[in-house]
Amino acid sequence: MSGGPALAIASQVLAGRRTARAVIEETLAGVADRNGSINAFTHVTAERAQRGAAEIDAAIGAGRNPGPLAGVPFAVKDLFDIAGVSTRAGSKIHAARAPARRDAMAIRRLTAAGAVLVGALNMEEYAYGFYTDNPHHGRTLNPHDPKRTAGGSSGGSAAAVAAGLVPLALGSDTNGSIRVPSSFCGIFGLKPSYGRLSRAGTLLFVSSLDHVGPMARSVADLAATYDAMQGPDPDDPVCAQREVEPVSDLLAKGREGLRIAVAGGYFAEIVSGESRAAVDAAVACLGVSHTVDIAGAEAARAAAYVITSVEAARERLVELRDRIDDFDPNTRYRFLAGALLPADWYVKAQQFRRWYCQQLAGLFQHWDVILAPVAPIPAPDFADVTVNIDGTDHALRPLLGRFVQALAPAGLPILVAPHLKQGALPTGVQIIAAPFREDAVFRVAAALESSGSFGSAQL
Amino acid sequence: MTNEIDSIDWDGYVEMMGAMIGLPIAAPHREATVAQLKLNVVIAKPLLAFEIPEGTNPAPVFKP
Image (cartoon, rainbow over all chains, first blue to last red; front, side, top):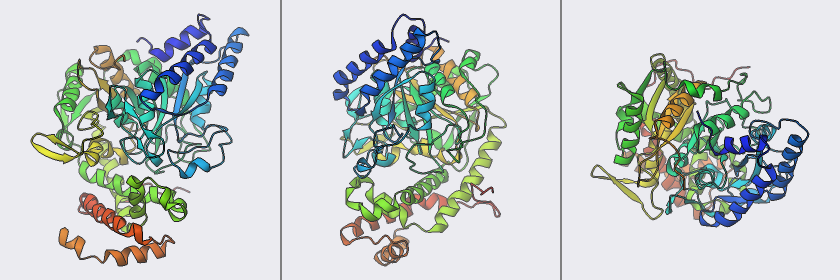
C-alpha cells in the first residue's frame, strides 16, 4: 500500500530531504494563490504554522522523531477550536466570541503526531446543510467545476483537500457532512463510529449524532490521520473508553475474508446513473453478489431529521432568543421550528433509533461491510433547484441527504471512496460496517483504491 | 395529511410553545416558522407512522 501526498511529505521531512518550513511556506503560498478560486479557507494561521514547522525541523535536527505526520499541513472546519482564534462555526453570531483558549483535542493529537495546522475552513452556518453556501463567508466552489457546490457542511474541508491546498483536513458529520462533500469533491472521507474520536473543543450541532473525522486524497493518508486521532478523552463524555486500534498496518490485507453485500431497496431507489455506476463499480471490483435490505431506512431518515431539529435548536436556544436576525435565513426557521416540536416526536425518534440499531446489528452478524451510494447525484449546480431522475423531478436540497441521513441514527463507521471515471464528476460510495469496525471499512477502501477504479483525481 | 395539517391552529401553537420555552416568535418570523413546522409534519410522517415494538427503550439510555 503506497502512501498519499500527506505520507509522502512526512517521509521527505523525516528523511531530511525537505524541511517542514519549506513545506509550510509552499502550502501558505498555494493557499494565498489559489484559495480565491474556491473559497475554502476562512482563516489562515500562518505565523502559528511557521512556528510549528520550525519546531518540527528543530526536533529532527536534534535527532528526535516528531511523529508519523511530520511537517504535514492540515486545516480544520471552522467549528474546531484553534487557540487564539474565535470558533465561528460559519456564523456571524459566534464571530464575536472570545478566542479559544486551547486547541480542540483532534488538533492537539494531530499536532502531537507532527502535523502542522494552517487554518480554518468554510462550512454551512452551524453545520446545517449540504451546500456550503455561507451567507457570511461566501460559498465554497467545487474544484472540479466552480459552478457546482462542494457539498456540505464540511465543504471547505473537502474542497481544500481536493484542490491540493492541503493534503489533510478535518470535518464533522452529523447527517452526512463529511460524506456528501467527500463524494462531491472526489476524496476519501471517514465518519468514524459514534464516540470513536474525541469531539472535545468542537462546537456541537446535534450532540447525539455528531462525529468528527478526517478527509484525504488517499486511503493511507486517511488511515494515518485517523490513527493519530484515536484514543479515549475524559473531556468528551461520549468518547469511548477504547484503546487505540490502528488501521494503517491492516490496509495491505485488502478485502480478504470480509463478507461484503450491497444495500438494495431504499438505497437502490432514486439514484442517478452516475451514483449507480459508482456502486456498480465497487460491486464489480469487490466481487459482491449479495444484496441486503436495510429495514426502516425511510423512517430512520425521518428520525434523524427530528433528532437534528430538536437537539440543534436546543444547542442554539440562547442565540435564537437573542440574535434571531443574525442567523442564516436558510436555516433560521429550521432552528425555530425545531425548538417547538413535540417531545413525543423526539422520544419516538430515540425509540426508533434503538430498534434500528438492533436491526443493523442483526445484519452485521452476517456481513462485515455493506456498500451504498453516498448521494443520489453528483455535485449539483448552485443554480439548480430540481433534478430529474428516471423521469421524475425531485427537489434538490432534500434529496442530497437521502442515503447518508438514513444511516445517521446508527452511529456506524462509514468511509466514502470516490469513484474515478474519465470526464465525469466525482461520485462516492459509502463503505459501512458495524460499530467500531473501522478496520473493515479501511480494508475495503484500500482494495477499491488498489483496483484503480477508485481514488482522488489529480486536479 | 393536508387536512390534518390545516386543522391545527398553528399560530396558537407557535405562540403557546414559544411562551413555554421562553422563545416568543416575533411577528415577522411567524409565517416562515409555521411553514417550516408544516414541512416538519410531512418529513416526520414515516417515523410517526412506524410501528415500534412495545417496550423498546429510547436510545441512548442513561447510565449512571
